[in-house]
Length: 542
Ligand code: NA7
Image 1 (cartoon, rainbow, N blue to C red):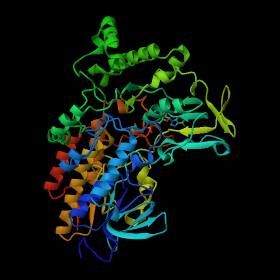
Image 2 (tube, protein in one colour):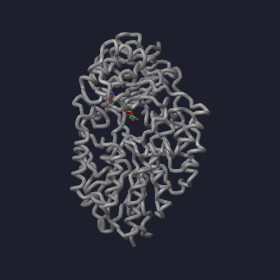
Image 3 (cartoon, rainbow, N blue to C red):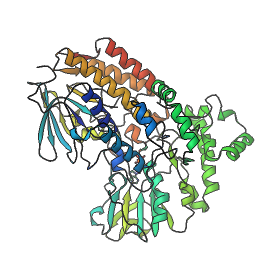
């Protein structure tokens, strides 16, 4: 019967109705596959459905953080700001669901609890959280890199009498915060975006900080009509640039954000006057100008000192400023954060910083949070404490491959996969931007287009040949994991002082592995195309 076995519920079950799942559905349906998409959420959009906390916004320019598969869609859709706010991206993804008639194959409020591969029939059996069971020949995991929320297990948390919120599970209807005493934990992208907005809404805001953030002013602003016209006229050129670049970027804003401005400039050879001039001209961005800071820890520390100096010049209270200065990890180890008035927020009367390194958590009580120096009374406690990133959305499913093996166990020492597309021992399962791919380091929508296109071609190939079974060869996987490791040597992600969600260091007890290929998307996709041209080398097919 080949791929199209009508006794099964679908040819392909796609898990997740975010950007990956929506686009996979569109493409695979066009190729003639019967597809069902499952998602736990009550709406489509994935990340952009769940992360609706005040201030939530994308930190990639709108004209780059969007799909390029349909020039008509590109011309019709209006992006209003350089960096899109969450509601606009959620609207965009809903528009895509409607425009391409995707909803009829999407089952919402249907989380996946378990997936079991039946070796006798080459079939995946999916158990949903709603008690349904579905079968399909193939599964495509569009489960996202930052979708399994992480919340610290503080003693007494259940006793809190107020409201507990998570930035990544924010209620759809919003939350009334006016006049209330709000506490927030977490100073990554989510916390840094939320803090200035919560400070404006709350009666009082207490920020519980474990690690000071490197965050740069986003300089977000509305896009003018002229800019819209100009950028729309250049879309084909921009997309070509994105699809062929290491990070899937096209630098539409001209801002120095995630890369260093001048790779040849060396801070180790700079004079104090030059550094002062850089601070005067570039402010916080002075710390992103020098190429040697990306590779050398001494150079990096000098760039960090420029950053600290800007914090001290911005924050009025010297003790608060000192706590807000990053001290013990390099720039570039954690994902750079972009903000809208973050440091200035700590000059407000209604904002208090609790530095958890100096004043650690003791316990949560009904009235609030007790730290070493006493009770912080709260009505609302917000966790912006990040995610079990990259692998968490997969290991939280009871995902069983050959011989009943469990993915969670196989990945106990860190995720291992072949180019992010598949895992040895788990036949007929593809991942979109899985562990071992370029992952979160390339702009998602164009990156998703490339990956889904590759998977769709592979599925076409299998269908055309009547194959019912495809599996990663263990040797190919091991060799690829070694390449991923080699590509990371010397990067800031692997510096001993670096604890970040990139390398699992953000979660206690999680294996420290960097499951991200640092060689760039261009090289990665060239490699993927070579595999395909070589009869899908690295996969065994029957
Ligand atoms: P991040 O970047 O992982 O940030 C989480 C923050 O929460 C970070 O400041 C953590 O401090 C803090 N955290 C985590 N656990 C605790 C505990 N137990 N106590 C105190 N503080 C804690 O997640 P985000 O959601 O902000 O951003 C994720 C990505 O989304 C972002 O990088 C963009 O790509 C979009 P830590 O630094 O671990 O000490």
